[in-house]
Image (cartoon, rainbow, N blue to C red; front, side, top):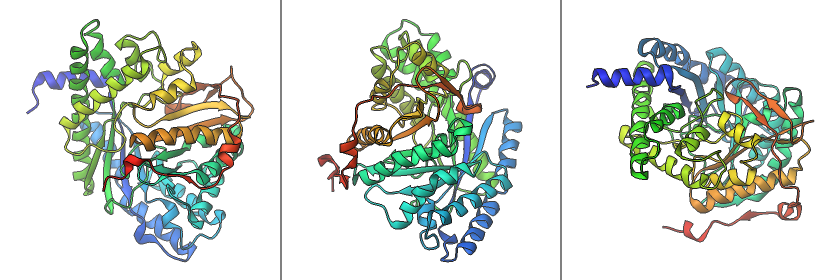
Length: 454
């Protein structure tokens, strides 16, 4: 039973500390939509999505009103389209037609984003998957709500360097096609290593083939709640610090569990997982970087940052797993630069650089996220940055990702405004030395020796 103190505490977290449910994401399998006829395939996809998700937004709003819990986004993830379209799609343009259908379906049911224009190519690309990857720039330029991801590596298979080389070029093409919106298309494209099948967060969400026909996954967020809790234990020991984070993460996750169960019951769709990631927003006080400062750093990026982030990430997970039997997705602390005002402040102060962000990704959720870089960055340099991040994920058996935005026409010292949850970002410098000969090599990096655990 919930007592009056707990109820009052939850109200305070929502009204004063930016606690929200970041997303209810309905995962929908499109495997039963597959057809060798492209027109029929598009009809099947539109019908399946609009049937399964027709009540998703309405139910989300009902739960918000009845419980007073903000649910920021209602989203859909679908089976990777590289698989769904393999039989019917013979060209990149064929895959673009599916992207348009996905966008039309998303608008029809009223969701904020739809993820799954994706390919899973950690060991190699089929012709269809290569065509999907080549379709990404046009697909993201001609749609409003479609998000894309490509999984290019895993601990079990190694890293597909051919796909990484291609994606360096694809990211630049996406930036060019959306340059009138400050290369916004790149904000809807994530490159993964060890991508999970049940991630509710965009832009990397897709409905994995290990999942059932439909499922409800919920992502919670509460950086402001954690920071406020830590303000009351300034100067205390690490033991007290860790206990405070853990207890706070438990409370935040329980809110998500309540919403997930209600959404599942009302929609008649199985509950999948709670993703208990600390996902910041540009709002003041809703920042992971501010938590690191509260722990004792002048700025995120100062010496000690990686250790502080490791502590935070671990305690969030320990608290969250006690609050829900089904924790999954990414679950940890996100460090997207443009979406976190504290991270932006650290970059502008000169405390945080790309290399330090890369080090931080070794111990937190996901990776190099929402980082604006100069528009004249070479494709091979982008590929090199991706390869470095994928290696961290492969060797450490964790999910890592890259979401870089080369902003066409802008350079270091300038900034870019994306708006909404995507925020704004200073253009960060990249290492100018060449890795072209490395990226030009063909094939894949083999799996690490510790991947052989059978």
